[in-house]
Length: 382
Image (cartoon, rainbow, N blue to C red; front, side, top):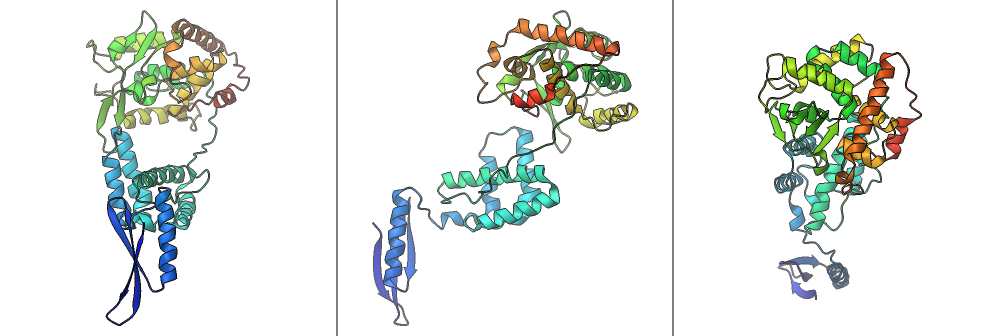
C-alpha cells in the first residue's frame, strides 16, 4: 500500500509525501494538496497491481547508453551488429541519443519518422523504426517504460518495388558479357538461387560435378570496414544441397579447371590475383556487363530472384522452393529437411529445358510466375 505523510516545510507550507515500493526501490512523490496525493497513490497502486508501475528514476537512463547495453547483450551476427550501430549512428543518435527513455514521446517518434522518410526514403525509415521499436520493447520488458512510444501502424514495414523478371535470354547475355572469371557465378546464381554471400563463401569441396550439386555450408560476409568474415548461413535452412542444371554444371566444370586451386578449401570464386573475391571487385565487372547488354537496372540479387522464379515456373511447390532457396520462416522451418532431393533434381532438369529454349531464341511463357513467388510468401532477401 502507498503511504501518505503530512509535513511542514521550512516556509511553514503543508506538503504531502507519497511513498510506494516499485520493484526494489521506494518511489516518492510530493504534492501540495492531500486530494492530489491520494489520487496519485490510487493510480500508482492500480498500476503496480497490473504490473504497469515503473520506477521513474530507472527510466531516466539515456537512450544512447541503453542502446549500447542492448546491442552488447545480444547474440548477433557481426554484420547485423554493425548494421544496428550504423542505423543508430545515422538515424537515431541525434534525435534520441541524449534523451532519457521516459522522455521519448509518441509525438516525437511520429515527427522523427515522418522527417526521416522524406530525407532518407521509406526503406531506411522502416529499418530505423524497427530498431527503435525493438530497443524500446526491451525497455518495457525491463520495467523501464510503461508502454512503448513506437505506435505507428505499418511504419516498420518495407515496401520495396516488385523486381522485374530477368529472363533466361538476359541471364545468358549477362553471363557472356561479364568477365569470364564470373560467368559461372552468374549462371549459378540464376539457376541455383544462391545468395551473394553464399557464392563468395563457396569452396572447391562444396562442388560435386559428378552429382551435379553444390553444398551451401558457409557464407562470406563483408563488413563496412572491408573485413571479410566466414561463417554459417544466416539460418539453419541455409545449409542445403542444391541440384544444378547442366548449363551450370558445364560452366562450373570449366571454371574449376581454369580458375580454382586444387586445395579442397580453395574458394571457387576469386579476384584476378587469386585472393578471395570481394564485392567491390565483382560489382565493377557486373556493372560493365549489364551496361554492355542494356540491363543497367538489373542487380546481382535479381539473379537469385530469377533462380526462384524460374524454378517456380518449372512447377516447383512452395516447400520445394523454400528448400532450394534456404528460406526460413516460422511456418515452414520444419519442412526443409523433408523436401525430396529427387524432386530438386527434377527442378534442375526442367531448368535445362528453359535455358535450351533461350539458346534457341524461344521466349519463356512466365504466366505471372513472379507474382506467384510473392503470393507464396517467399522473402528472397532472406
